[in-house]
Image (cartoon, rainbow, N blue to C red; front, side):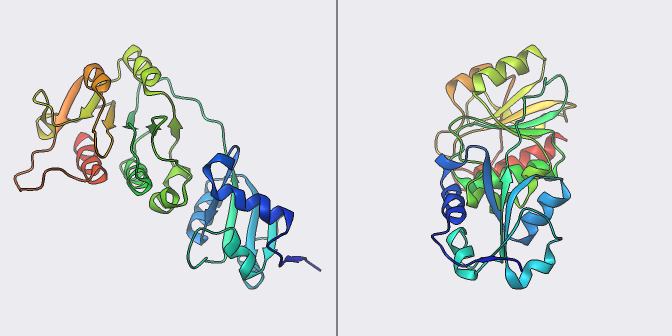
Length: 247
């Protein structure tokens, strides 16, 4: 007979709950809901544990990682107001930066909002880009809000976190064109650019934009003309406009 965990003080549950905090996500993180679980499963992701309500267990093929829990226990390890019945612990893969000799990449410099970050990773996935690079100060990729915004896109393309100075040096050495969005007087309308076979598009911080160092190293500074009265666009919206124009 399969044991069902009904106590919130169970050691496994207490350990798993810690993964809701960034500081404890050293080699694994939590995903929630059937869509994310199915996307992870489809892409061959490795699970450490899969927590499922007893009456939904038949939706998951029998496997060693499966752990049956009560609804109260599932809420304990969930970030959602109304859990969907499944929470899975995903083992983090170690990924190395590419050589940048080819490909199309999105670079996010100090993007703070998890929703914006997740939306841009999802947009990069939709556009068929080859990867996303996050600066050290960007929002956490495995924040529950980021994961909800990405809708599993981080399973479809590699997402790297690295010091951008090192990344830009490697891109320069590989002759990968670096484009950066900015409202600088030196920037040009993105529509004046032709599609690129390879590129790195840099989107900056919501409040500050790109850094002065990035503006100096970029090969092209670009902006989106806005005939209306709004002072700026949401960074995720701007990323979507520019990414698809470059393809």
